[in-house]
Every structure is written in structure tokens, then in C-alpha cells.
Image (cartoon, rainbow, N blue to C red; front, side, top):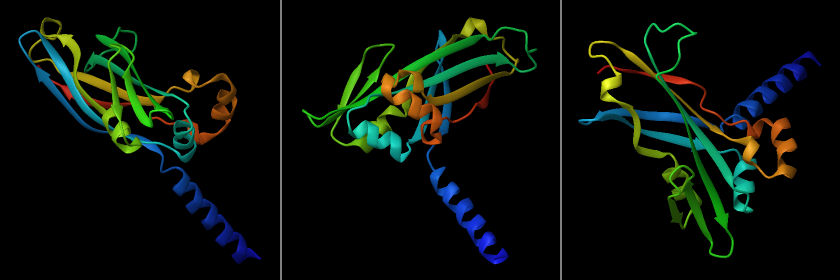
Length: 183
């Protein structure tokens, strides 16, 4: 009996590990500076859960948030962020046209894709995102850029939200990650 419990515990652990394969990974972060400002280029690997993929395939639009914060290294918790930006993107499937549409909700820019994988990959490509004016950063001082990507459960259709709140397959996030920025 004791042996069966150990096997059951191992099986549950492995099953839980497989279920948690859905996550968001911020894989590449680069900063570019031109004459006036700093820009961010990043790639986010959106690994969606089966529940999210099924909802998307059935026409439920999914909204993603990218939170970007900048502070100087050594800032106290009460000091304001130099930048606190919230970017929102949406992916949706249109069954009539059989196309996936990725929408930048800030700019209103829309792009269409034939496959779901191509749309999700394009969703994760963020290029030329304006961060700060060069004048806002002091030369020689080190700054930290914080990024977090997440699925916005609040943007789901109302009947789906209670399920999303209760099911861990919908709580998708990269968690906060930081990178140094030195002017």
C-alpha cells in the first residue's frame, strides 16, 4: 500500500509538471539608442495552455499585457518609476476568413496570419518600443528595466472569467524579469 502511494505521488507530480508547461518566457531583450530616445526590442515566447488554445480556436479573443518599468539601480521602494508603461495586444481567430488577427491595441495596427503558430510568434515580437528620452538618463548611472508579460483574464468574455479565475491553465505570466540598462 505504501508503495502505491509513492507511485501515485510521483504520477501526480509528473502530471502537474506536464500541465505547467504553459508559460510565457521573455527570451531576448535588447536596448537601442538613437539621438533622442531608448527603444526596446524583445521576443516573448507565449506558450499557451490547452484551454487558452481551445478558446482561441473557437473565436475567443485573448488579450496580453506587457508591463515595462524602469528605475535606477538603488532606487528606494517609495521613489517613483522613471517609466511605468502598460502595452496591450490581442489575438483572435475569425472562422469566416480562417485567419488569426494580431492587434496592437495602443496603435490600432492589425496583422493577419494563416496559422495560429505564426500569429502567436508575431505576437511575441516587440520591436522599437519607445522607452525613455536620452535626457532622462544620467550617463554612468545604471538603470533596471523590468518586464512582465501576462494573459489579461479581465478581458475575457464575462461567461468565461469565473472558469479562468479558478483554473490555473488561465493564469499565464512570465513573472517579473529585469535587465540592466547603462547609458
